[in-house]
Image (tube, rainbow, N blue to C red; front, side, top):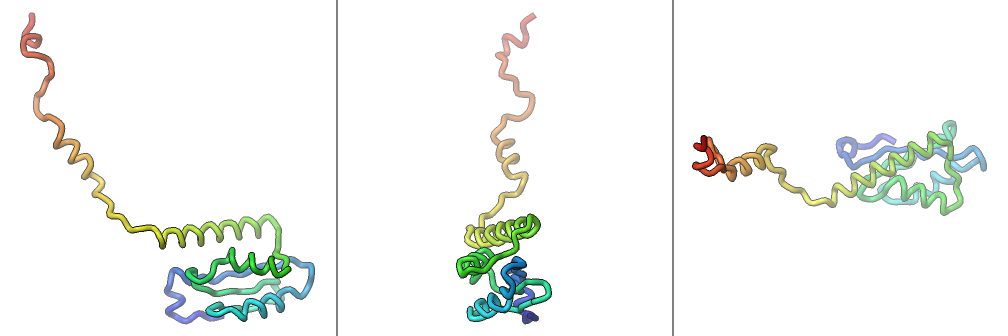
Length: 138
């Protein structure tokens, strides 16, 4: 699964591996055949590792969607703690990246601009709110 150079440069192109449970055996070829039917999805089975490598653009697929579809079709993913944590992290990262693509770009003010504006509104010099008669009171 060698991505083209344009895909490789894109921050939205993802290369992931879906790890399957040991039982039932024979899931990898079936799952890779099922996923290979999808457009714009690179699929590479790795029988010795019990994984299916997938390459996709984040704007078209997410790992969460692909895994959910496989589970709905009756495939069993690896459910060890490390696999669950890894999948959860990848799901979060992809969801956040997609959310940030939809977020409007906003201009950030210079970090000192707020302070400059507040300082301009503040009286300067030896300003004292105490009435003059009280200042000179002895």
